Length: 344
Image 1 (cartoon, one colour):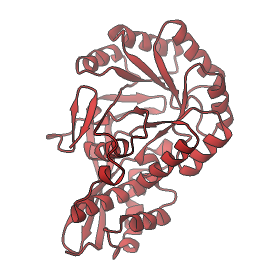
Image 2 (tube, rainbow, N blue to C red):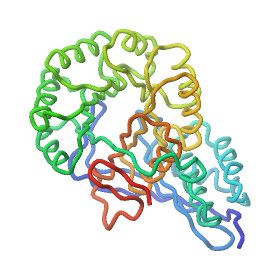
Image 3 (cartoon, helix red, strand yellow):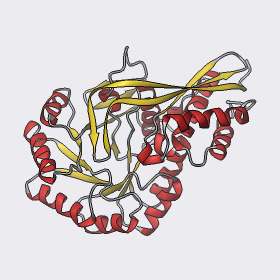
Image 4 (cartoon, helix red, strand yellow):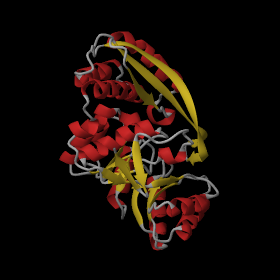
């Protein structure tokens, strides 16, 4: 059975959301993605997926498709049983397109799995078989209702999007979530919406009101490393970089030049190999790690879950987009029992 790549193709697809997803950067009612099909000489096909978010990586559905079409001839003939060699070629060809790179890496990994019988979970160490995820509550008026529904499913940790133009509306939404689930643990995600002083004031007010806040994610503009460091140095809870950490080089800069306490990694933001590199950087610097997602399907979430469980490197899990998407059919990629995502 030949394991060499013959062709790659890309096709955009959309999946509706159960509810509008609103952050400080905009809103959407559909997840917009690109499916990549990889075909081997044997005739086997494998699939990867890209979920580009323009304000994070600069990519769109159109640029992802263009990237796949451009690099496909360069990848033809490579042997997927040497998946690291394939990943290295993908990285060389897509230096500034991490979401497109993710889909190619995922397709190559799927082909490797089918050909060899191995698993990503296995080659990364099988540290864990399951992890607990949070659920994201966007900037919507029915935040309390969504919280009640998630609590009834067993969710105990809520990641709350903030950054509304009306600051009091943000606080009112947090209060509604706390009223709906008084014992919940809270994570605050500003998606770059605050100034350093504004972020600190927001967190201190929540703590003064008795909120159980675990961390603050990306409080300031992604390029404002100095401001991010100021918040991390003064904030009474851990501060995590998200949009500021888009490459392993960013991760290295963050841990060497700022006191930021953690990094939020995502395969569609950094690529699969890039996430593994960032794990090593964060561990060496004794920083905490979160693994997140970008409105990804069950298939993509399963890849991230395999990384999280395989390495055992993550302190926090934010893999909830499969709960936000209205995907058809049964979830064949992993199981969920309450807040726990379970491989196999």
